[in-house]
Amino acid sequence: MTTRRYQSAVRAEQSRATRQRVLDAARALFVRRGYNGTTVEAIAARAKVSVQTVYNTVGGKAAVLKAVYDVTIAGDTDPIPMIERPTGRALRASEDGREAMRLYARMSREIYERIGPLVPILLTEGAAGDREVRAFIDTIESERAVGTTNIARHVASRFGLRAGLSVEDAADILWTLTSPDVLYRLVRRRGWSLDHFERWLGETMADSLLGPVKDA
Image (cartoon, rainbow, N blue to C red):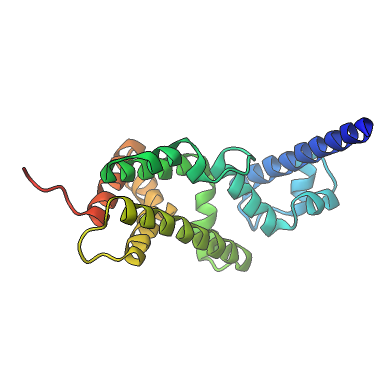
């Protein structure tokens, strides 16, 4: 029994390591060649595995892109939601609404610092109408909508929203402001520093959901 458990643990670790090699290889190729310019065969060759191993451990190219994105956002392969990681926990524990929004802006920055190299794939190849990339974008935008809805509900229940603002509209505002496209435009195209963007985003989200700070 002990031997079988040991062998099972070894196989699981080997499978995890193989999957990570595939994702590392795919990420490097996606960043360098784009989605259309990357093939499963190229991913397999770079990872030094067979094509069938790519399919067995992750899936087809679209599944690989989604897996690369998910792992890159988190920074590791641990199945821990962003809201359960340090910045997310600090956000939920905050006793001040504006501070909570500043922490949410920090979370957005932390995510972009990891996924930044992948953003051009979403903006250029998705906009060009690639079916698989478009489906991938639809999936992650739906996931983002769930996340921003949860944050909007938290802010509403913990601090209250400004007069006339519904939770649904608050969620849509957060979904829009935290879009990778917004950060990409301001940082990459307009030359904002990430510090400048983080401050602006935190203040803008706080003003939008809670109302502007009133003069004393």
